[in-house]
Length: 511
Ligand SMILES: Cc1cc2nc3c(=O)[nH]c(=O)nc-3n(C[C@H](O)[C@H](O)[C@H](O)COP(=O)(O)OP(=O)(O)OC[C@H]3O[C@@H](n4cnc5c(N)ncnc54)[C@H](O)[C@@H]3O)c2cc1C
Image (cartoon, rainbow, N blue to C red; front, side, top):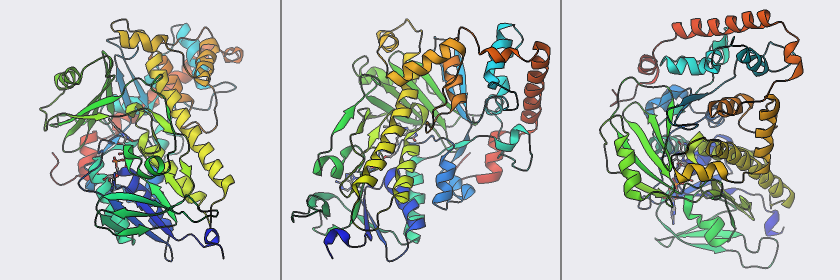
């Protein structure tokens, strides 16, 4: 039997950050002996450790990796997230909410709920969008509860939520789970990547990585989870990187944890500054903060100064600078190497999508897991899907930068004036014309997300679709009143977020 036709059994993961351990967690839930999973990581190099905010599909990942929710939140100082509050993004002094879950209810027909809302708003008969979004109202009231699937028809039935957690503790928790399922971890630095030099179908494939100790870790399939180093996919296989910095100009972040302040908010806050934005992520034991900025417009010292000036509590460490380049790997899967995490690409932390892209990278690998050898068609399909996911996320993030009316800095003016990706232009034009939200299969961000951001940053449609007028104004207004009142009534009975966390998943050492 040719080497390439041997059953593929040995998986080697290079890197033990969120990407490495999420991959190990998911793979070890699926692959049992004779499969072997090894992970190598270097304590000396360490991890990036700032991925602290997530989006709702992470709950599916937890299901796949068999992670118990309360246990994992306890282990990671986790809290709940209902969405993101954006401050100063459209114009300075403005704020809006991008919440999880839907807007309004689906029951109106024949057009989308938002169409009736646009019409009522024009008549002065609608409340702001938030009044029809339960996650936004719950977030503003600082309340949270898990969804109640048993409450059919209630807004609480499918309350959308995700988590905030300590990224370092998350990797540690996944490591514990993965090791208990048989993943073998080797600590140390990889100093060399060995390629197969034998002529044949596996020529140029990675054969082994060599540790500083001299040990060779051999494998059939390698996951490059080495972060920005791209040890296998870039340094060994020289796979190109598509640069997106002309659309996403921020290239650095300065991060610092700070003391907790009450109340414990169930949402992330993103505040735009002169040449970037600042995140605020509340955990049980501290608040994670960072300022993402464009180094062409602001110095590191100034960026750190702005960050520190806008903290709610006392800093707990010195600010740490992280450099990055937005873009994606031309091929995430090349030969027998699959890049997952920051080695595969980095969009921007603005909508907390990086851990999601990791989750999808490993879930799709599991789906296409090879028998033996590597099928070019499978690899091409994996790469096609991966590209599509990254591009959808990119376009949604670019929307936030581009759609601003700030006139206080060169940075924001350049963002407003920049040429944007064609698909994004089309989606904005469609909304501007009739308030129509593009239904794009496969886009992580569905219509309600686009609506909230476009409205939140002041894109106002010229009209609405014709059939929004089929229903009488009074009837529509009464329906909307019912929706907002039901949401308000539901929010009123929810517990305070801090109280819910304390009862459900309080971590040692938290407040
Ligand atoms: C500023 C910023 C904010 C972010 N915020 C969010 C957020 O809110 N939400 C979100 O989802 N994501 C966020 N992310 C992204 C998120 O942090 C990363 O996607 C996630 O942590 C995965 O990183 P990684 O595992 O790919 O890389 P890393 O964490 O860098 O891990 C790389 C691993 O490779 C190992 N390694 C490297 N070289 C070698 C070598 N030679 N030998 C052995 N081991 C090696 C390292 O030791 C480490 O274990 C953010 C990223 C940045 C930069």
